[in-house]
Length: 109
Image 1 (cartoon, rainbow, N blue to C red):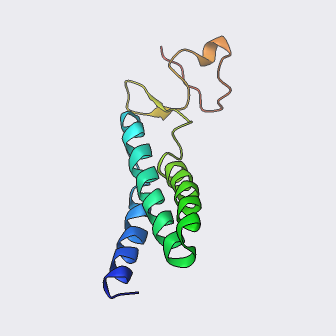
Image 2: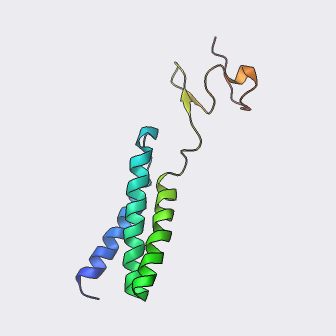
Image 3: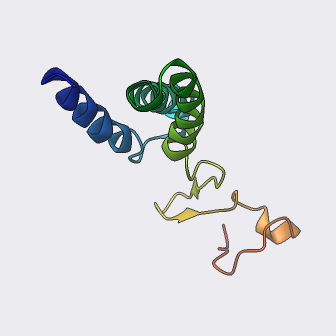
């Protein structure tokens, strides 16, 4: 491994978790693409260094899927804001109709 390879490896390892920070839901597809791309690059790099061509292909697929999952974690639980600035996991007025089971449901009077 040359001197440049450890620096590239460290840069990829540091960059992947940074893509998983909080963001708005409208950035979901961008975050999925970035997380998956960085994961795939890291997986291909590690697989190529450790095991050759086949390991690079398998590593890029697995790490790409893991990177996408990490980057998009938490977006399956939408949060709605009310006019007072509080956030709830249920759309306004829907809990009254029995569509949400939320102990923190609020009255939108």
